[in-house]
Image 1 (cartoon, rainbow, N blue to C red):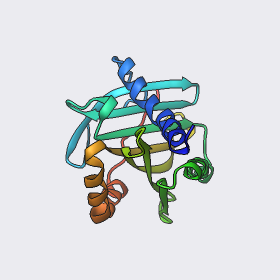
Image 2: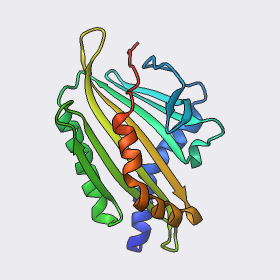
Image 3: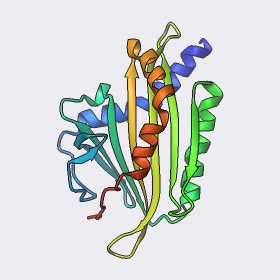
Amino acid sequence: MKKKQIIYIVLITLIMPVMIKAQTNKAATNYLNVTGPIVFDNKSFKLNWSSHPSANFYKQEYLTKGEDASKYKMMLLIDVTAGETNLKNVVSAKIAELKKMKEGNPMVSYEIIQNPKTGEYLLDFLLTANAADGTTSIVERNIYRYKTFTGKAGNKCVMLFAVSSRAYAKEVNSFFIALKANRKVLINEMAQCKMPEISIK
């Protein structure tokens, strides 16, 4: 199997589960009691999919009206890990994952930004997937914002609030051009936005 085909399979394996899960769960449960819709980038996002796969982990995904989870252009994500207090370890684990992916795909890139006043982290990273002919079929840019908080029950938690943007096939080149010109815009918006209020059921 050619190396570019291996890269394609690996990245699609990582990217596709989000699409599949969001499509198969039509009645999303608001486990985190987030008041919606969430407004970000002057767009209104509604809860589309959620999961509570373990006792201490919750995940919710949000899309704008008319967006399809299998081919979204922008998605918001909220992850909460209850009982976790070491924010640096959580961020380091994600960076290790990206470094591993970069070994097979040099297009993978990332930047980590820490806010010394709040202790929060921003992780800005880029993923791509290739078609069988080697052209880029999907480009995905994610900005993850990590923070710790104390729940109503007094339990410490780590929260991830993220925005994921994508382009497909013929839109990929335009996406890269716009990203180069306006990369800081979305970073600043994510850094300055009010984090959703969480109340775990």
